[in-house]
Length: 273
Image 1 (spheres, helix red, strand yellow):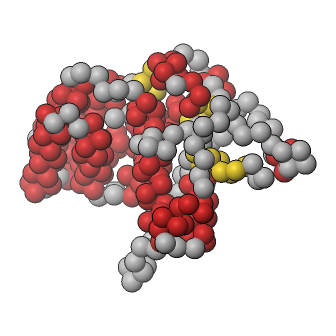
Image 2 (cartoon, rainbow, N blue to C red):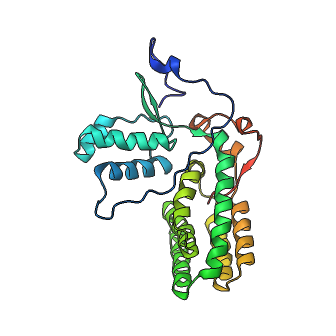
Image 3 (cartoon, rainbow, N blue to C red):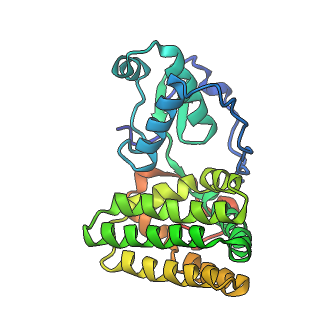
């Protein structure tokens, strides 16, 4: 794995890349596109989904090379759908393409993390209030079932399973609110935060704490109490902070930039499950 950005070859197009301004680039979030229901998932969709999951879970680590030929052979396809998937991941900030040098899993941009946490918190505060106002009994039952699944994977010590159950929990709330598209935007915003979380080993008892916080949110929604639901969510997100210094010191080569680029230093990131 390269220890820094891959060096540009003499005469390469790297020299024409715009210099960093020292400011964090704003997150580019796209509203979920309407898919023609008659069109099934394409090869590019499947490859994008799988590569994205591997990058977010750190099965493919920051700095790892992306070899399109190998991926095409593994999927039994031409390089065209692979290239399409790679370009989509580059747009999401998960892959970096260096002409004449190679394609690599992007490092985690520190300067993007505070903004991502704020976006998530603002959107989820809105959705949890709507959910508390509109939730049906069957939807509340689905949330309780998700809590039970979280207890099961916690008992099994399955951190990856807990991550998936946690994602399902928050996605269910956006569906109950009547704005499922919000979850797509939230996922785009928090993708780098998710990668940070995977850098730290699960803290003993942490999953049980998260479950207790989820239980408080569910009870507030079940009682149709928007104020208490919002406050429970805020407490949950505030308690789920990752200190940047901790994860950066654990794996410094996985990061790029600094919090000072975003006008923040020594800050904690909110809104990471």
